[in-house]
Amino acid sequence: MISLRAMPRHILAAIRYHRRPLLAFHLYFALLSILLLAPFSAWLLAGLIHLTGSDMIGNEELLLFAINPVGVLWLLLSATLAAMLIFLQHAGMMLIATRDARGRFHTAAGALWVICKRLPQLLKLSGMQVAAHLALLAPVLLLLAWAFEQLLGGYDIYFVVNNYPPELWQFLALLIIAGIVVALVNGSLYLRWILALPVMLLENLKPIAALKRSAELTCGARRKIAFTVLSIAGVVATIPLLVSFLFDNLGWLIFQFLPPQHLLVLAVIVGLLFSYALVNLAAGFLGVSVNSLLILKLYHRRCKRNRGVTIDDEPRHVGYFAVGIEAVLVIFAVVQVVVALQVFSPQDDVLNIAHRGNAWDTPENTEFAIKRAIADGAHYVELDVRHTADGELVILHDRDLLRIAGDRRPIWQIQSNELADLDVGSWFRDDFRAARILTLAEAVELLRGRAGLYLEIKGAPQMPNLVAKVMAELDRLEFTEETVIASLAGTDLLQAKAINADIRTSLLVHTSVGRVEGQPFNTLALRQALVTPSRLNRIRQYDHELHVWTLNDSASMARMVDFGVDGIITDRPDLLAAVLEERAEMSTVERWLYRLKHWIW
Image 1: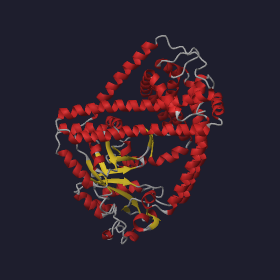
Image 2: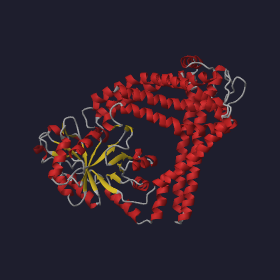
Image 3: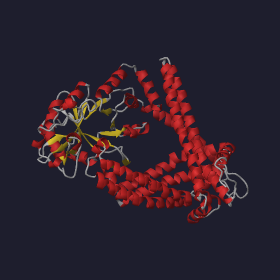
Image 4: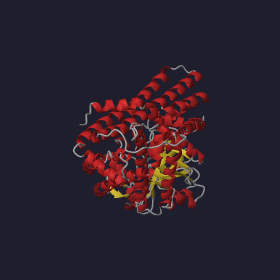
């Protein structure tokens, strides 16, 4: 009988009793993952991506990559390796908390040794489970892709996320139904096989036999198991949220009242950094331990077995092995701190890049937006370019005019003379009724001598010559040196470089697979969620500039400035100018301390 009330007590008692070897194994495994498993996985997956002829699959190419045989293999292998890492960590903690056939518990180093010996079997078990789950998931994903194309394929995606057409609600309803189906079907399979790992470890069975044995053990009790697992997982999931909330508010509160004495501020930051690291370590350890021992306790209750059937002899010099790992762990931590400190830069020369002009207070990509952005102090104005049916280069974000003028025709089917008197401002506010679609030449003249042009190529199969037309027009207007060519598609940037090797380019990255750094572009423009201290360090190694988009609040702007990015793309260039002005008034030491503070919060 599975008792939800008793289960947490038993799990916490086991963690308390085995806390030292469990924590040691947690640290050993973290080090092993960082130094060996993660680099090997990255190398293997990068090799698969290289088979496609590129080092990176990004943005618009992701869908094609996902349905390519290499992409399917990459997905299967990625999921398998991720599952294997989870299995390895769970396996070690299960071994520590379970006696072998002689009645002895495993040490942390001994558990690590045992799972290394059983690595092939663990890999097979994870691969089988991942393949089964993906096979069940594939028809649902194909159905959703078909439904999206039928319901929303005729709309520009930006119109969908901003204007919510009726078809969006139909698709969301279908998405909810699909989510319920996936939760029931894949969840049922997960519960069926939830005990396969302890079965394989403690009963010494092969992967297929372990899956069958797990199905037998869980038969008739899966609802109770599901309730127990979900209840405890829900509690565990709140731990990192509580830690983040605690330190966010604690850090903010302390810095509100802390006197501006540099040594004192530095001491407090170091103390908070150390505390944050310890609490995060404890929270991560608790979460992994609870999940591992939950599955183990479920296994014990279902099979009435409290020890394994095998005798696992540890290596002869396991003590030296443990000391060696601990020494490497300390050295690695010191190196990480040194590297992190070297990333800091006291420079605050951050480019203010106005996203479609000032798109916060004026209609985007219009004369109003450009003039307002220049007045707000923007260094560059980011604009989007497409061409009409007769080849006129115009400033327009969406592929059609539905969102800004109510016309569903794509721009490449509209003649330029049809745009002359088209109102593209009243959708934003009635007093902008005079706004018109600009040509690229008109936009350049508004910017000349006032700000640079950050021009995003909005390519489409129906506009195969767009890049060539843009480069020719910029050359005619003698505005190439003041322009940065940006695109979500790396092929557009390579084409621009082939025409003019000196043109500055910026790869816009929303989502990618593979190595973003080291691509043959001057700048990487990443969405905020992709910007981390480690990524910034890698980008600096390849001599790229780093721009981040699209930030519209002062806290995010200040954080990215303190991270050391080179440019911020924003709808609110006036707000960014104020943030940069505030930073300019700080001393070098103050800026350095703020950087360190934002590195943590």
